[in-house]
Length: 178
Image (cartoon, rainbow, N blue to C red; front, top):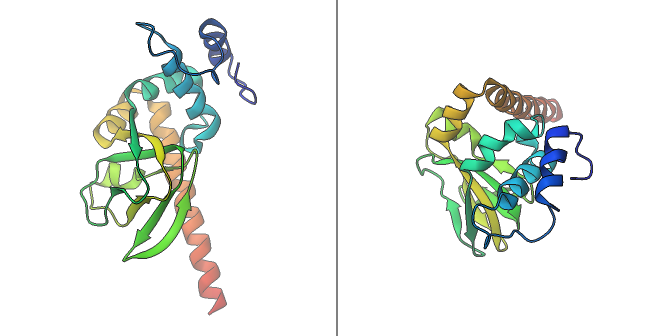
């Protein structure tokens, strides 16, 4: 069972499916191992979803699309239409606005969730610094999940409220420093 995760449902499923750290056995038809590994990853390492239980994460894990980007490849560009949330499983992504680096994100980072809901163009460019393996969750799918599973919607609201609080706190600190 996943260390550091107190989720009886996930522990039971992992006991049935095997070690979540073992290589995914995608050669076995109908194998649940890759799906369960995604649930464990979301629960353990993606703060956007960390407040949800394993059974609540199952519908999220089912619709994630796996992606891979080479160094220098753009995941999306400033001004692009929104297409969903990005989650990094391996590698580093740099966010840039107007060519200026804003931040670097690594394993477990989720980003792009605001554009997934407000349907406004991307406000930054996200580019792979290293080889990046991750997942995307289409905005329309996230919206449907939030409607069907209120706990997922509330978790996303909590996440976005946390971001707003961090930004306003940072802004207040900058204004005080002037």
